[in-house]
Length: 295
Image (cartoon, rainbow, N blue to C red; front, side, top):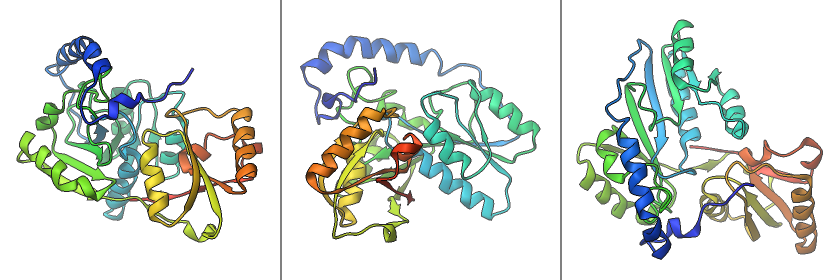
């Protein structure tokens, strides 16, 4: 059974449930702290780790692809490294469309292979909390719509580690809603005055494939459904209904039948993300289109 992110994670302040779970969160923090001083492995290959503190939906994969493009234009031999998860084949496929990807159960093993094959840069899609590797550059991605949610570590909140650990990182990448930008930048600099902040936004690249006089039913099973809907609306899509599924959700034939049933009832087209589209069974995709984006 796949579960959605709890709503209380994104409340501006912790609620009663968060405080009840707080003791477990402190145990998670203590457990994680044991790995901070773990002996790290050094490699000749340059390593760039793109990760997050807030769980899911922060734009890691898109940023990894953009950095890869920049390095390739400058004639560097690059590759991606992503820890293998059987339920994340959508992200793996997108990375494979853009370069060589090493997928081992341990990132350390992938990096050894990449170094042996004479790659100059390894770009990690996720892995900030993997302290076995001494990364050359560490970038933390945040979505400005959710920022740090209620500010608590899992399971009381959406953070993989305490936000105070931001002082360990080199760069922050922000994407999403610009309304909260000044407040978030102030918060970041209060934690790490020397950190460099980069700002980006998702730009749709296939808008010519859509009829903007049509109404649309939007669905997604990604880490941040709200960002997807906000992006569609900012690009003048008429969204009459949207449905959120759990992150990396595996769609069944019944799910698709239900979506088709709803779209027929509302007399609208169906739209989703590229990641979700890659998780659909081929016989079910004819009436579903996806928005392709880049940073």
